[in-house]
Image (tube, rainbow, N blue to C red):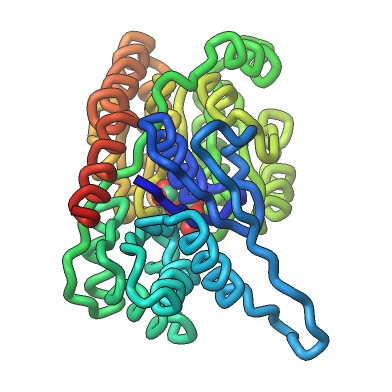
Length: 371
Ligand code: GMT
C-alpha cells in the first residue's frame, strides 16, 4: 500500500505513535510518506521505504497568521498525486483532519482518509467553540476514525455530537527499546545513594497536574527517602521548579528536560507517576510499563484501560495525592511486591500493547478501506 502520514513532528505521544506506526508499515513493505512541517523527531534517519515531504508556508505581509492548514492541504494533494498515495492517515484532528478532507476534495475523492484522535484534539482544543465545528466536519467526512481509547471515543461522541462509528485502537510500544545499561547509568546519576527513584515524564501542560506529582513525592520522601526525576518540558516547568524549592525538596528532584531515548531514563525508575487531569491514553505510562516500571496514576480518561488495578499499576481519583503517595510508600516498603508489580507491568505491556499486535489492527483497517 502507499500510505501518507501527517502528525505533529514535535516530542509528544501522538507524533511518537504516528511515526512508529509509519515505520512499522514501511518494515512490512508498504510505501510510507510523512507529510509534516518538520522531520518527525522520532524518525531519526529516514529509512528505506519512507519519504519525507516538508510542508512550507509562504510568508506574506498580509498574513498575521500564516495559513498552515491550507499549505498542508495543498502539500498533501501534491504528494498524493505525484506518488500515487492511496490512503492518508492523519494523527491529531486539528488541523490535520480538515486539511486531509480539503486535499481529497482537490483530488476529486482520492485517497481514503483515516483520522486518529489522540486526546486534547477533542477534550481540550477540539471542545473550544473556535474549533469545534471544523473538527466535527473533519471527523464526519473521514472514511474511518479511530481513537486511542474507548473513553476518548465516548468523549468524542459526547463533546462533538458526532454519531458515526469510531474504532478503538489502543496505542502501542516497542517493547525492545529498553536499554538496561543506559538505565543503570541514569540511575547511578539520579540516585547515587541507592535510594528508590520515582519518575514523571510529560509535556508539563496544566492537564498533567505537575504540582500533584511533587505533592505525592513530598509525602513519600517523608517516609521513604527517595529521588524524583522529572522528564520533559513545557509551560508548567518553571512553576514546578519554584514549588520544589519552596517545599524544601529541590535537592531530591531533578528536572531533566527532554531526554532521548526517553525509555533509557524511564527504565531507571521504581515507580512512574501520572496523576493527570485528562489523559486519553497515557503513552508515557505504557513506556514505563514496557520497561518494567509500575505506574501510579489518576483514573482520568483512558488511563484505566491501560493501567489495571494491581496488575503493574494503580489508579486513584484525580487530585487524591494522599492515596497515590500511600500506594507508592506501600510499594517502596515491600520489595517483594515491588518486584512482582514490575514484572506484571512489563507483562501487561507485552501481552496487550506491543507493536505487532496493534499495527496488525491498523493494517487490517487500511486493507478494508482499500478493498
Ligand atoms: O494532548 C497532549 O497533551 C499531547 C498529545 C500528544 O500529541 O502527545 O497527547 C495525547 O496523545 C497521546 C498519544 O495518543 C496520549 O498518550 C495522551 O494521553 C494524550 N494526552 C492527553 O489526553 C492529555
